[in-house]
Length: 352
Ligand SMILES: NC(=O)c1ccc[n+]([C@@H]2O[C@H](COP(=O)([O-])OP(=O)(O)OC[C@H]3O[C@@H](n4cnc5c(N)ncnc54)[C@H](O)[C@@H]3O)[C@@H](O)[C@H]2O)c1
Image: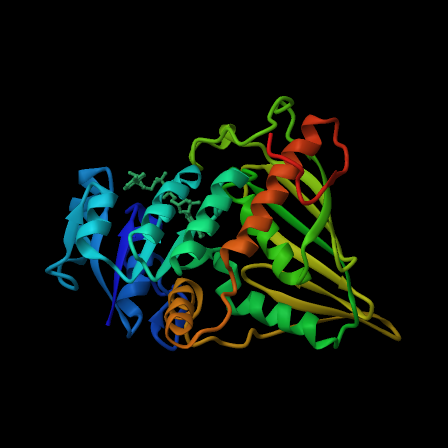
């Protein structure tokens, strides 16, 4: 068995599978809603230790998982955990701006694989030191951009790559939510634009939510108060010519979706539905598509991919390098706005 540890024990790190009737299922049962649930469900991993600065979250974890892991070790000091436990896999589930130091420590401490929550980081300096530490110590670094392991998004990407609809030309993504924060939640959408485009952004422009005129670098609180990060509208031009529009606003309701326009049809995509729109002699025909199931979707897929790559080699679908592209685009959007909504070329010349 591979030995795993989790640092950061809020819901995404620690909660037990939601057994409600609506909960999605995979071949391995309920789709895990947390890093702990994923390590529990994966047949090759066992959790040996967890850590949080807050003792009450350690107590809650013990209460929730005692029947599964009665001998788990509990820490409030991550460095002590890494030194004492020498885990194979380490999940970093701390606030958005506090992933870097722990990821570097895990790599230096000998972890073979690190599953870091998204966004990778909130500065390029942090992103670079995380990627460099993983490379220097031979650790795999995967970033938990959840949708990359969701069947509906895999199926949409495969449909685009099949060429059935012709070349992908243009994408839109819209995210409306009380928490339409650029880094905390926009990171998901910008990352998915990269995944679907299959390319790197070459230039960007953006306009931030009103009231964020001087917001030229990340000033969030790790993803809590929506006021600490702007919503934004923007545009990404990818190296392969694909164009993408990003729009978001802080609204009392929640809605997020993508439209993907190809030469011979369009794809409408959200977490819930995948529809192909094709031209016919009498107008547009809309066809719902059933996603191709995955045995291990979501967080379980992220864990499984690390296990497979650790043991057999191969590529990560959400590597540190690919997640860095999203961080760079988000920072470029801030820079564009701060400089008067101008075009910002990538790579960014230097971080501001
Ligand atoms: N992939 C997804 O869909 C998804 C969903 C929810 C959250 N997330 C991500 O998960 C991360 C955690 O989010 P959150 O809102 O639950 O975070 P949070 O701000 O509530 O913090 C998580 C925990 O980390 C602990 N922590 C911070 N520094 C620590 C340290 N040095 N050592 C040990 N523990 C430490 C805190 O005490 C806290 O309990 C964020 O990066 C967030 O973006 C991702």
